Length: 314
Image (cartoon, rainbow, N blue to C red; front, side):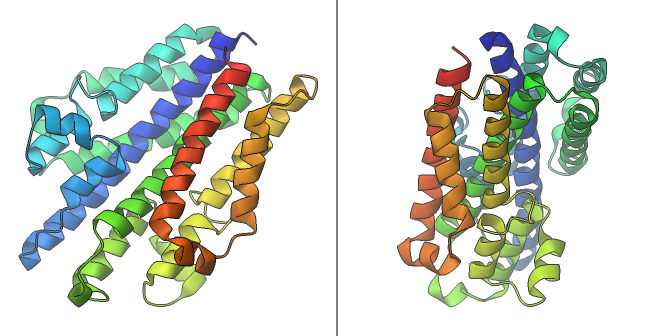
């Protein structure tokens, strides 16, 4: 496969996943902000949403204060924000067009239908009252795209590069969401264990579709250490860091097998990341600092992506 085709598939999947993750973060922020307003509390959810998606600096340069309307507009449809939902979908579609012969007709149809629907939306669809409908639709379109490539692509290098992009983006998003709650929204001493703290932690689980998973596994009140364990170390949780890195390592192994077994630094880094999570303990993570662990993971994920690009896409 040509390196530019591998890169196009990799980034196609990353941008679709990024659109979904942004929708998840905004939905959680929207619900939490509404609940906090009813309690007369400023929870900082809109600022946290921007930090979790890496949009805070760009937003500050363009819009200033983190009012709900401004944040929603910037993160859903601002063309100057390359990580806005609409920008992500447009970029994904452009990548798909560039690698049209490497994707299936069903994948192409999903992206075209998604783009066509976006162009029919009016500004009213992005108001705070109506935007949850758009965000749920975005999640559904990403799930449809992922299901389509899982069920229609041949298990060749094209499929593996697509899958690699999905899980690298997913792992980074999970780490960012968890870090924002713990480091940015960490409540004052008086609030720890209180109603605000409880609902903020629940919003983290909701953003990752993990509320019921937590209840099934732990069957008790929400605890920060158990939430961290679920989202970092539990292999059976699909969006956990452990689960994502296991898929990344296995996918790189499959790519290497298809290229004569040749390996590079990206394979070593993926194995190292997976091993730390496979044998890690949540107590050790908290003793070393959860924020430090998560920022270290994010930095390692960025480095891994760069090494994958260097080894396979240049």
